[in-house]
Image 1 (spheres, one colour):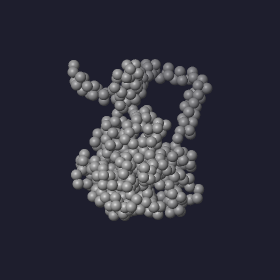
Image 2: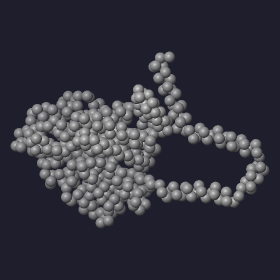
Image 3: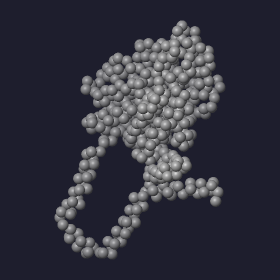
Image 4: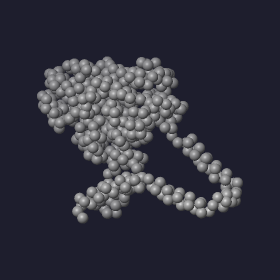
Amino acid sequence: MSSSSSSAQLKRLKPLYQHVVNNFLVVMAAPLAVATIVNAARVGPDELLRMARALRPVHVFLAAFVPAAAATLYLMLRPRPVYLVDYACFRTKPNCRVPFATFLEHAKLVTYVEGASIDERSVRFMTRLLERSGLGEETCLPPAHHFIPPYRNLEASRAEVEVVIFNAIDDLLAKTGISPAAIDILVVNCSLFAPIPSFTDMIINKYKMRSDIRNVHLSGMGCSAGLISVGLARNFLQVAPHGAHALVVSTETITPNYYVGKERAMLLPNCLFRMGGAAVLLSTSRAKARFRLSRVVRTLTGAQDSAYRCVFQEEDSEGHRGINLSKDLMTIAGDSLKANITAIGPLVLPASEQLLFALSFIARRVLNRRVKPYLPDFRMAFEHFCIHAGGRAVIDELQRSLGLSDEHVEASRMALHRFGNTSSSSVWYELAYIEAKGRMRPGDRVWMIGFGSGFKCNSAAWECISPARNADGPWADSICRYPVDIPEVLKH
């Protein structure tokens, strides 16, 4: 028998294997139940009644009390379920749009600005990056970047923050109908801008929130900080009164971080990062909830020097500050993803996939790694994937590593094309895309994956309760045009 025919035969048998293993208890319990019924029928009702009367009262008491006590104890000690009430993304403004031609013309003019080191060679390099980036012509930069030279001061940075996060929060409050006074917990993340007062103080002042609100501003944690914020809000909700509400706001402030030097490793963020933000409302009350939070799994590889420095804010030799992206970034991201898969796999994968993975692991140990490692099929655990839109290379690598189809990564590619890399909020633009396309169904499971400096790979698993009723949101004016074909190299 040829290897191709045996492989096809194995593929045909795999559904049967998955059904048997994933329903092992049912498969085993059904014959036992039938045997019990047959034996009871043979014994007869009079004999069964005699056996029941022979039981001592203490046995009857224990048989009833112990399971009830165990069930009560489990219900008291288990973590409270946390729900996503709703979310809203910042809707970009047409006056902030930056087509490629505008971006490159602006970069050329910056070369003439006193104090800037960016030169014609750097502009040509950014041109090649943009052509291969996967970004479209409608991505947006803050108003301060439309000036020559770009404004990078505190006032302009605060102005961007207020436009993005207040817009997203206003939309969220309108969608949910909740009063700002009803919010008990506030968690905000922004990596590269941490003013005084903090973002949480700005929000509390704007919306006149309660004086006893628990609030945290996370900074410096990279593009995966949005999922860290969700995990932190979940932990707060576990110890808050039932029905408490947590507001999570994720954004990245672009204004103070435009790099005007000529180090190639530090020019990439100029080309990829764009305006964006999201506001998310979580609660321990199921009322009006749209998703249930199943898992949050965080993995950190920062103990390794190469991982720690692969995304690093620093000054170049001429004193220009920017973000240095290491050439080893994709390798480190792949290793971080493997660590996260190892952690989340046992929590979400069906028994059939876990068994195959375990057998592969044992075989590799016994046969000295001559057996190819088995990559679990996460399509068995999730219907939708929201992969951080960090760039075309990031999406390509995850699609290859996880064995996903083009449709599975469509939301990530389209979010990158329409909005660019919006950092920690990108996964919410992707979820909004899936819902705007009408693909979400009750019971569908969603896997959000984020990468960030440090180096971190974080995951959140959600289960849909109630899909969005319409396409209102960041995609309202463009969903009809998507998906679009994105060439390997865009000529303009």
